[in-house]
Image (tube, rainbow over the protein chains, first blue to last red):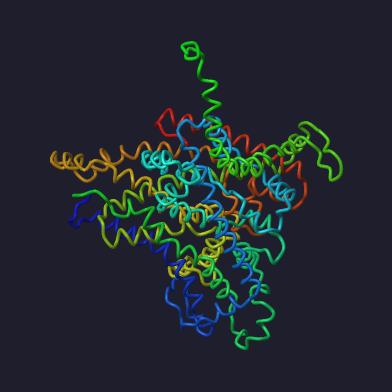
Length: 294
Length: 308
């Protein structure tokens, strides 16, 4: 519904939206500018600055050459990649089973899933279960944690329900078993939901911080988000700078703790920024287009 | 022949169906095992709230001892009040924002401006609270932060919002708004897009003003998502945002944003008072379940849409 002509209220709304957008944009870009600034010129950068002062990659060199940060990135990547594959596979296969007609026991299973959805286990008990399974301090604990999200399972079921039944029936008549139908027909036809849900899983795995901090306590198992919290919230400067780098890097004296922190934040945002275009393309394209014709 | 046909059929056919679908149940097994081990088992273990924890030997049943202890400690009352205040602030203050945002965005047709606003405003939803805290610490920094730059520009004294008891809850509300405003507006935007264009045409022919079109056509179409979202949010009032608070906390203001979840975390996983922490957690979970169930049915009755 919208007039193309210029009106005063529209101008006011436009200005309000622009200010709101700047309020979301500037703090994030300011972090980028800080991370890419030359430490010598950093004092010129204000909180409203969006352009790096004297381009430099020194902050990233220091952060990425810090073995603790490298290890944390590796751990996070492992949990994200392996966890997303596991989650996607088991979510889809479960959704396939639950969308079969005549499946005996479907109603009790759906009620079971609703209970799962509304009743959260206690933190202490989740910790003890991981402990009893000998998964504490193993990256597998975070691969297994929330492996099948009930919401995504239900979304996946809706998608599979939309696959023409005749396709699967034909394959079944030709003698294909359920597993074969699943791998040969359902998976290839679910590329878009797999991509969409996979991305949501990946982002959740990459961003997970509270449970990672509980389940993975030894330093070599720490994930990036937990390490970043150590820098940001607990202001742990010594881990961030890294002792070895202090001796190695002659320009370290000029390094600014806040800039190193900013560089770590940027590193933690990179995978999100890489996946973000996929979200925009497949998930929000409906509302991005505007839709309504004049 | 005729006799067999007249036999009651359902039972054998059900068994037959199950045995024919053996492979299906096998495919379902990992999911069931997963939920039983990682979800049902820890829920079952929450019975610890009624037991004294023993490292060696069986736990001792103590009835409601830990619940009594909980409700006689002033800290727990304070924690409940904090949880409700922070949740209520978020619930009421953040509710209209995505609606207004969607209405504002709707004033702009396809084009670079609309797209830019959307691309920028949806992004924070995908950032972790750790990253958001990192961004906001810089944003609110008294020495170099953007907000205090602006405050100084207008001739006021810079202020450290993150260590001030009177402002920290507002920081929680504002950062939550910053994170979710764009993303939460999608549902309303989708509802607006779903409106039949013929309605606008008819209204225009009748000489309706923009204001009339918004109040008589657009808003009524947003009523159902509005009511649904508001009711369902009540169901989550016991969750004041653990991840957010763990990343915005510091010694000066910790007691002001100490919620049930942080209490459980501190008592259980840091202080080792497992039974007390579990009692608090169980209390929170049970209220949560009751609220989610009742809001689900209320919403279903009022709008036809529930939580699932």
